[in-house]
Length: 66
Image (cartoon, rainbow, N blue to C red; front, side, top):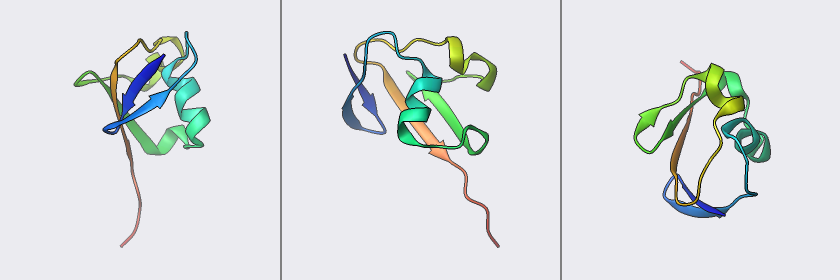
């Protein structure tokens, strides 16, 4: 299947979850927020939220600094 990740098409295995996507991207789950089709997805729901064809996913990574 194909999703739209931060504005770019990305192929993904059928049945993949948000947690799977973040693992594939190598992102630390503690430092990101995820939006699916314009709705924020709670961190506790990432392992059970399966992605679907043409989902629009926005992943925002928090960066500390001063």
